[in-house]
Length: 247
Image 1 (spheres, one colour):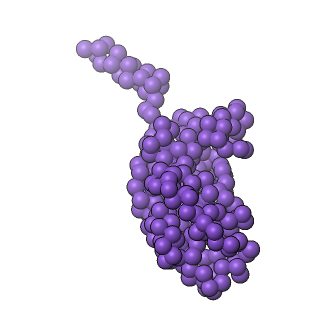
Image 2 (image 1 turned 30 degrees about the vertical axis):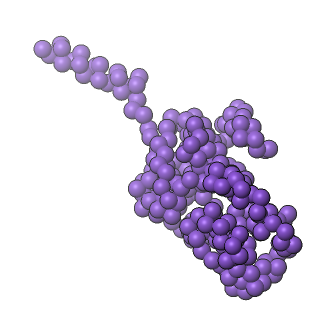
């Protein structure tokens, strides 16, 4: 019996050494195509990059699709490990660790087709009513400006519909996101809107983890290390090419 128990003990130890327990990272975010996309095989551009980077460090990612505001609060509280698609702000930096940036968003204004408006700096928005999305962090000067109105909605399509019926003057979003969202929701809407030539901002996109999460700093460091590796070995470039994005 002693020899049998010794054999069992050896097997358990050996199994642990040769077949280590899989390390799983929980991620949460709202649908934000094409960056976070429940219908895509890899979960969208952001998840494809994040999964590739973290896999080099022995992690797998389990994604949960929930409203973005709830995902942010869940990551801050430690319920979820990472928020995959985050814009930086000083307020958020006090609550979350931020990774190295892994892609950029070009945020443009959307107007009704035929509207001659062109964005020429914040002053060109004076007197306008601009549709924004709840809890999204836009350019700090844009958010602080008080000489135009900000009409808050839960999602982009709501803002687009408001725009078309003249309830707001403009709305804004990353152009790649806006085109994909509208194409899926109601392609006819694309014929009724235009994008400004000039952008409000070009914003880096980050992975974030809560500062109260004991694994938070470790996960961000792991992502950064993995991101550098997939940039070097060509995986990162192949992901961008898959989604038709120029590096």
